Image 1 (cartoon, rainbow, N blue to C red):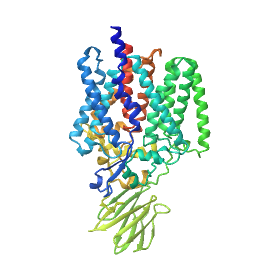
Image 2 (cartoon, helix red, strand yellow):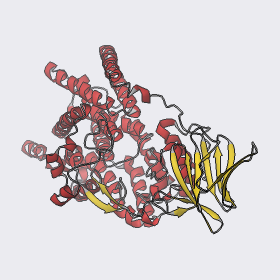
Image 3 (cartoon, rainbow, N blue to C red):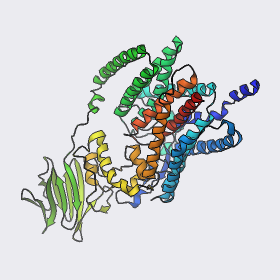
Image 4 (spheres, rainbow, N blue to C red):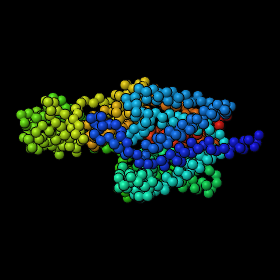
Length: 571
């Protein structure tokens, strides 16, 4: 009997799906050229062929892992019923998956929902894979060795991230090295793109291999939680020193993502981890250490023109352009609570103000200074009007006695009143997240039961809110592809019921782990608690960020590991 137990412990290969998600998935970076299909919309360019390095192939890789894990899981549940852990806590996730499928069936773009689309590629299969992988990790994790192997995977990916992140801090991005680019694109693509990748983020932002510094911050936070718990609970001096160095290193990388939510999440993780240890010296040393580290980082930020601290408080520097509407009368502009009408009458450009009874005129080709702001101006040639306002040039045309807006790609469309929640002028908060949320709020009632479908947010968001995008996104042709709030995005794409199910799972998860970790004497407890804090960190940052292939797979696997650890302690 003892030999069989030893043999089972050595069969760690069932952990491969878990290890692939933790340590391999972040490295799946390769150029994909695809059509997003948005050219059929007025708000998008006629050319909808775009490139992707970070999500396209990652989604298919995760699909394969999810299918493999699902098959293994079915065999395990059938053959080893006596080892099967209670699945009650995953009932909300199961219901969520049902609504994912239903939203896909009734999707506004079923192709996008099945295959994924536009900088996200979280298709129906990907969303289902998240749930499968979480249940898989929950059922598979059994022995102390399993948790040790997971710890090695966390260490491995953390060390590699620290190397890449350190280079990025010093503005030496490995992704721009020629030999790296040859690895992530074909010879033909390398020749076509001249070996150059357009930098999405300039300066010394840390984004690792995860496309966006916000995504890097979320992932680093989850890894930090596990490493920091291991640091606090380690008794061997040398190991404790190594884990301490790693904790500091990851915290520094989080700082250089310049993500406010991630920094706050990391600080809260340290506080909760220290409190839970129940040892005053940890709280004292942790507080002093954190203060010293923060002072050093602030000093470093001072040498970088306070790039980080200048972002800590949102300042309302937006122009008070409230709306623009086109109809048969002309172009209606509401600016700073004042209404203006811009139109062509008898081959003369006229700007009239309703409240101040101002009427300005200009001949064809003559520049008109508009009263909205200092540099605002307009000019017209034949039946086209060019308006420079809010640091953007907007083009309008009068055709068949009606005025239209001409997009940057030359498409003719109307501007209309956009339904929005009243944020009392606070739309600029959260790097203009308030603006997006104000437009999303009125949409929620349409998707109480069934959502628009996975990866269809961009197609149902009011993209024709050109005035709003000029003010809050700095350009009219900006595509708002997500809500920058995972809970709102889920509500829109998979329905309000699905979002509620996820929140219920989160609440049950937090409740299940609260008070479960009374000591840290085993690898099971240490890794389990680290994953528990990592998941809470993710839930918090999800208020300001969306689910992505760069962050969510790690969260769902960590959730399964944490729950498995809790069940083992309660057994």
